[in-house]
Image (cartoon, rainbow, N blue to C red; front, side, top):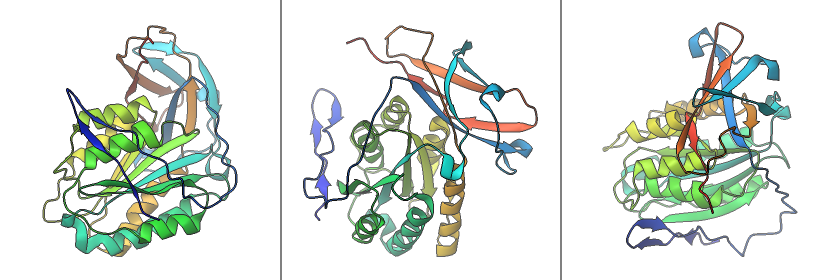
Length: 305
């Protein structure tokens, strides 16, 4: 199946046209989606200052949620870890620009392995996007691992790198209507050479859609991991340097898999009813001592219609 290209439009402001859905997807059965208006926050809790084991078994009463310093009423909490976790929607973004051409086979094998070990049958969805001089949706969201594997193995090297545009498109269009835990996993050397949008615009799009970004870096002649680290830090995700070796790349995916499988899901309706589009800081505290909690830094309030 040919990938569907995102059209980049230059106007008074740079914007990205919606990522088109494929009308040629094989029959994969019904995909049911519903959504409620909540501020969703995914978090992980670890021992020993964030370097120890993941902490399981915490209850709703163990958490306190603050927005701009004001405590909020936690209205939804899922302590499910692993098989009991909320459904997952993963957008896997693969950098196939010329600078990483020699690493593509490593990326493909490790990405397929990651999907097999991460996705739960008939519960978790994934989609595949490749980005270079263009951004292409190779496979829309599906439960079907065979289709996902086929899409990953069909990636081909291109020219320049539209990292920021790819993050924006995956956040603002592809993941916008998905439910449950929404995650972007991006494989890249971190260098953007041709995006129309800025890094901050891409981060904002992810924050607006409650998306956690995991960056998996691999070295090239032009490696710069700064942006991948910022994406992860600002959305509550994780950055891992995979080096060049396949086994190290697989280990990096294993770390991301561990994060995804040990997420607590929290949600609340903000006490601040202003629809001003302003950024609001989120702080989650644990009543128990000795643990390190990681979550996104905040979100953008909706604008009045």
